[in-house]
Length: 426
Image (cartoon, rainbow, N blue to C red; front, top):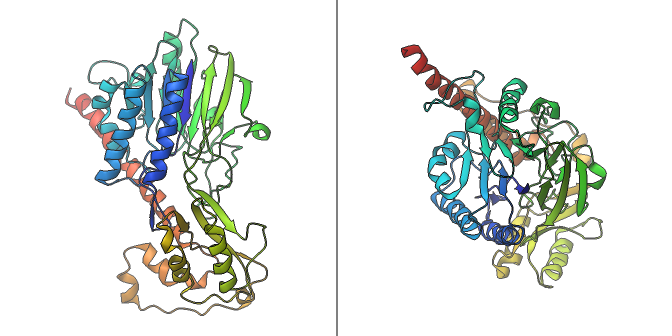
C-alpha cells in the first residue's frame, strides 16, 4: 500500500493580520499534484486543519474545491481522504461527504459517538470511519476531545474481522501525542495536552497524524529529517504542515510518502521536501541584534534588494529605542516589492530588559465598564501593557481554540441526540 500523507493546510490563513497566502498554497498544491502523478499512490491523506478558520470565505472554499478536483483529475484512481482538525468545523466538513465521494474523495468531520448505534442504512457505526481499498484499510478519525481508546479499538476490531488478506491498516488522527517535538508552537498559553499513542488502540500499521507542524516519527526523533527511513509496524508519524505557519517553524516542511508491505510488516517513509514560495528570515542573519531602528531599516533594505522573496522579522537588543512608527517605516520600505517581501511586526528581543524590573501601573475599571466587556479579549487588550512579552495573537489563538472545542462538543451532543431520537420513537 502506498500513501501520501500531509496535514495542516490552513487554507485561507491571513498571516500577521495583513498577508493572504493563497499564492503560497497554490504553489504547494502544484507540487503535490506532481508527486501524485509521479508516485501514483493508492491514497492521499490530509489529517486535519484543512482550513485556518471554521467559517472560511467563499473564495477559500472555491480554492479548496479547485485544488482537490485538480488532484482527482490528475489521479482518478487515487482515493483522497480528508479529516477535520481543531481549526475546522466538523459539521461543515462532513456535510459535503456524499457529493465528494463521487470524486473518490472522503470527507470525515464528525467524530464517533461514545455509544454504538446502527446507521440509517443498517450498517454498523464503525463503517462510517473505514475506507476499504484494494491495497488496505484507512480508518479516518477527525479531531476529538479527550481519549477514546475503546471507541477507536471498536473500529479497529471491525477492520480486523474483515482483513483476512493481511492488508495494511492506516489510522488518521489530529491530536498531540506523548513524546512529540512541538518546536515552532507556542504552548505557554493553554499548555499542550497530549495523549499516549496507545490510546489509538492496537491493530494499525501507520498512524497518520496532524496538529503538530514539525515532520517527525514518534520515538525516532534523531532521524526525523532523514530523506528515507524504514521501520517495523506500527509507526506513529506527523507529516508536518504544508507551509511554515509561523516564523518559529525554522525547519523543512515535507510531505510523507509511505509504503506499507503488509499488516505487521515494514513501513518505508520518504520525505518529499516542500519548496515554499516564501521563506522566513530573521535579521540580522548572523544571529546578532540590531541596536537602532535606522540600523535595522538599512540592513533590511540591502537584504531585500538582493532578490528572492519572503518574510522578514527583526532581532533587537533591549537597549534599542524604537520609534512609535517603526512598523510603518518598515511597511514603507517594503512597499516597492508589492508583498513579495512581508513583515512580521513581532520582534525578537535579546539582552536585559530594564523595564521588566519596574512594577507595572495598576489599572482601575468601573464595575459598569467591566460588565460591558462581553468578550474576554477586550479586557486582555486593555491590560496587555501589564504583561511584558505577552503575544496578543497567541492569546487570541488560544481563545479561538477553546471556542472550537466548545463548538465541536456541541456538535457532538447534537449528533448524539439525533442518533438517539429514532430509538426513542421506536
